[in-house]
Length: 283
Image 1 (cartoon, helix red, strand yellow):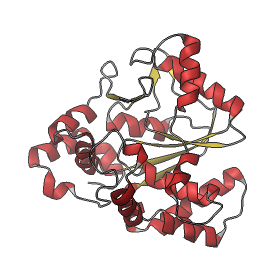
Image 2 (cartoon, rainbow, N blue to C red):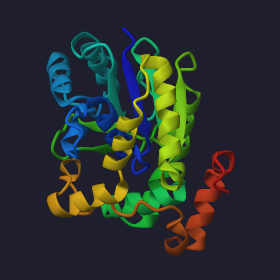
Image 3 (tube, rainbow, N blue to C red):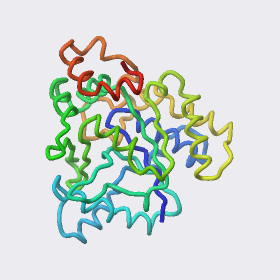
Image 4 (cartoon, one colour):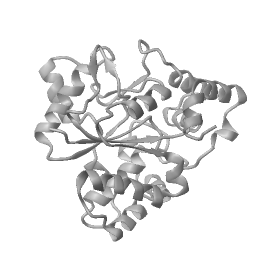
């Protein structure tokens, strides 16, 4: 039954970039640049599966009952979606009302992308068109009874539970210790994408039992180049950003927070996430 390889992250941390690389490597048979291949690694929960489950449960997802949908959707995936499936995900690895987001029965491996929270708040504020202070207030909340979440305006059943940046990171770092896991830093993708993504393929090679194709690897790097993605969005848009008026591929830079955050904002983030940021080399 184990079949899901999770590609998880707090929002605006490089998840889509990794997905585009893996989509090109595993699913791009034409070997040409085509962003539609992103669709081969869908976002959890899959819309049709969630609609099936919500109809079965005869309810609509909200923050109190969303956990009722999680495992039910994964049961559908285990039954209907082949041997191995990559799934994009922004949920924290939490329990709500005693129910797990996922577990080792359904999960084959975990890829977690993490980014400096000071840059996360800058990028996320821009994407949601909220103030920096509003985003900081949301991502520092550690109260599990007051979880930070986002609900799609187009699909009322599409609700992602983030919690705080700290809880999110630690949940995937420390959870499900019986499955293979890898943590990738957004900053490493920026500074040396080739080395970082090669490390990712080596990790997956041991799980999926394949030989790395050097030429396909190079092509996948080229097709997931941030500037190329940015240029494509400017010309044609990006379907996963259809609910927002801002650019999805906005900056692709590190340490943009230095020129944008004030000292009080920096202090709040660094104090709240001190241990985790130190561990990751951010401070």
